[in-house]
Image 1: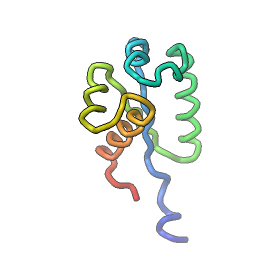
Image 2 (image 1 turned 30 degrees about the vertical axis):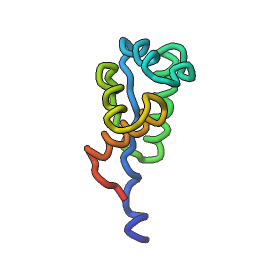
Image 3 (image 1 turned 30 degrees about the horizontal axis):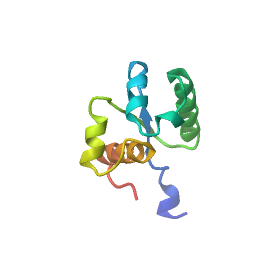
Length: 102
């Protein structure tokens, strides 16, 4: 068995949204029209994804998106407030906590 096979799966991030922030974030996200219409629908999808990742042995870090700071973060990091921006935001938070997992 190699060292690579001995290591647990890497930690992964999942963006997380508070119910009260969902309408504001939908307006901020440039792809908000592609998101589930309600927070409850989004939560069901997010929890299913999280459970699936955990079932494969990943540690899942919930990364909350704050509607008051997300657009500024995206601008500062040269990305847009959409799927790509959310991915980069989550990746930065996971890297900050866990470092390079390669």
